[in-house]
Image 1 (cartoon, rainbow, N blue to C red):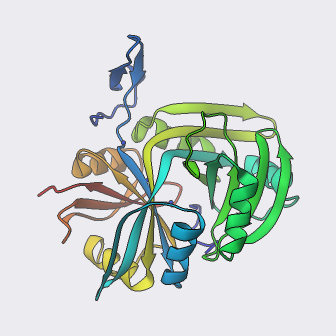
Image 2: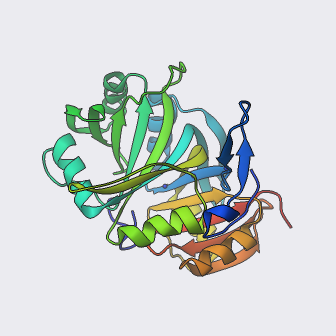
Amino acid sequence: MSRIIPLALVVLAALVFGACSRNEPKLTTATGASVKANPVHEMRVALTVDAYDEALRFYREGLKMRAVETWDRPDGSGAILDAGLATLEILSTKQVERIDRIEVGRRVSGPVRLGLDVEDPEAVARAFEVGGAERMAGPAAAPWGTTFRMRAPDGMQYTLYAGPGEKTGTTIRELRIALTVDEYEPALRFYRDGLGLPLRKSWAEPEGSGAIFEAGRATLELLSTKMAESVDRIEVGPRVAGPVRVALEVDDSAKTGEALMTAGAQLLGGPVVTPWMDKNVRLRAPDGMQYTLFTKHAR
């Protein structure tokens, strides 16, 4: 599970793209302040798992993630789980090495790691273990709070942490997908200027660089191997995705795909109208991550 397409490692207001900030869409808050609109309605992290039933129990019963949709069909099984807010974090290799040293003691993560902002990291770590996960390290005193590094039964690494947000009474407040990129500046431009994600925070320090983007609502999608093969056939033709793929719900998947290709993405397939009546486009970002852009119920 730790290996996907090289250099990559899972999802959102009107869609307007522009490399210049003066062309970025704006929203007005209740106080009258102007903020940048988010072109992405939802970020969905899609995990392909060999032991589907085991993974579904782990996330739904162990982590108490609410199932938005589940299906079990001849072409495969799948589930979509509510994962709170979504953020996308891109990190230079040097920064990831620092994070791993702090949280674990040595470099252990692959190109993709997921972070969960939870109210009680220790309690969630215990739930992970009951569900069959491995505690790799923790509790660790990091500058960003007490953390636990876990490896889920499907192989995905998670950092459990308690963010500064208000208590919500839910197990998971935020799902953060952290991408390690060899070429940090091009990746920053791709997600900030090409995709237009609102920047929450960025830093450039001797220890490394990083940025965190707002990515709308988060869902976690579990797919059996058979289902992942079916999705690839529909969107692309051949089987091309690794164990992790990110899907972004946008207003116009075809237009968004064109904008991202201009920003350096490679078209893998689409636009195609799926059997579930979404219009999908499959792309590979410059950092190697595969993205499905989808517009719901489009023809």
